[in-house]
Length: 252
Image (cartoon, rainbow, N blue to C red; front, side, top):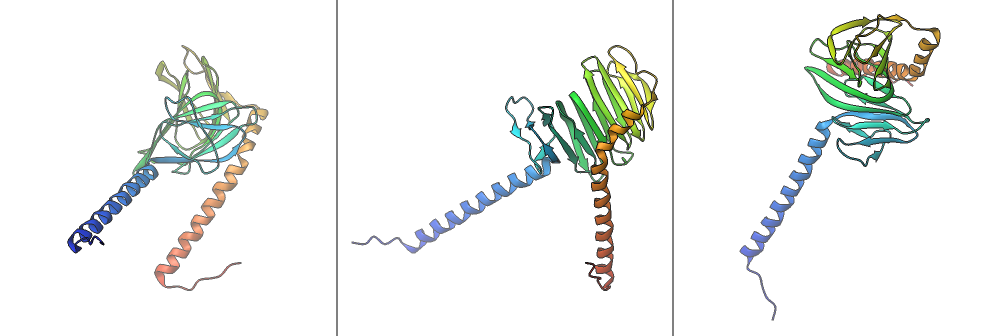
């Protein structure tokens, strides 16, 4: 004999299944939005063995182009041929050189300003920093020194736990010893300073021709930034045309 389920029971079951499906979709959507909101940078131009570690974790994941980076992540280039670019949401870029480790100590980026604080645990990085608003800050720490930046192109090298070198191609950097933060020197275009343990930064001196030439490896970054600016201008023009009801030109 066929057992028939009363209509009200069937409706209750269908309603229950619908509610559970909606709740599941809501949870997945919330997790996705939270993960997206937490992303502060992406990895680009990855070459060689690059790893991304979460704070306190010994096992990292393979770094690939487009990989998302969160605050408290560590990027390591493990090998003589490994390097990668960290591209922050505000457009600033960091080229991580071989055998280097960068810890994203604190990264907060929003419309009101940005706060980017990194620690270079080992190796060398080149920085291309967008012009910062008065409410923004960009700092790089090593075991020995601190560099505060206001829109510039510069490098930081952790030579050892007791020594760091800052070179500035464009703009200015304020460097200090981690243990003597009140004693700073300002390093400007084509100058460098060295910070040794327990000593204030040395007076800036001019970079050599060889040191200046090292910044040529950033040429592709400048081309990318130039293309991004050109695309933004084109997008702005097209948007203005849409808002004004103007005609569009098909440029091939």
